[in-house]
Image 1 (spheres, rainbow, N blue to C red):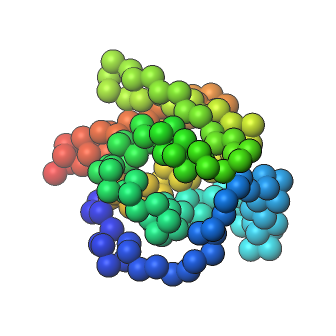
Image 2 (spheres, helix red, strand yellow):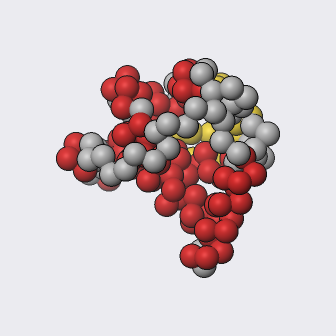
Image 3 (cartoon, rainbow, N blue to C red):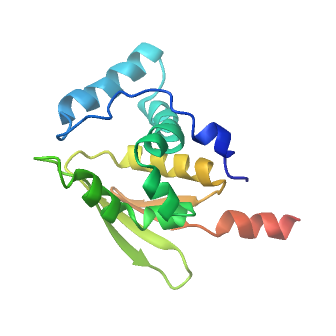
Length: 164
């Protein structure tokens, strides 16, 4: 997979949300996801998947370009999430960003535990897929618990190399 071309990554499409100075209303935002899925007649997971690509490839890129400059892969981005969330929310009173616990396995895979009172693990999975689309990679995601997954950043490339 190739990385998205810069011309499709850098075109600013809006200014909404750029002046949010405090944490968002969790109930309203989650309700917005649920109602949007109902109106569009798609599953919540499918909506999350579409949102994950949009957030990772368009909105966050426009709002937080410095994080894309600092990270060159899905793997780099994922292991930076706690620092990124801390930076983004440090000036937002009442913000409660998710936390991530990382545990590297001997085989080079990464166990990630998602901790948040919002319980949006499915959305995290979709955002990860959006990162893969942006960076042109294919992370193998295996769910191993309610809020825990194993990420194999090399599986797809190893499989592609073997079949070439």
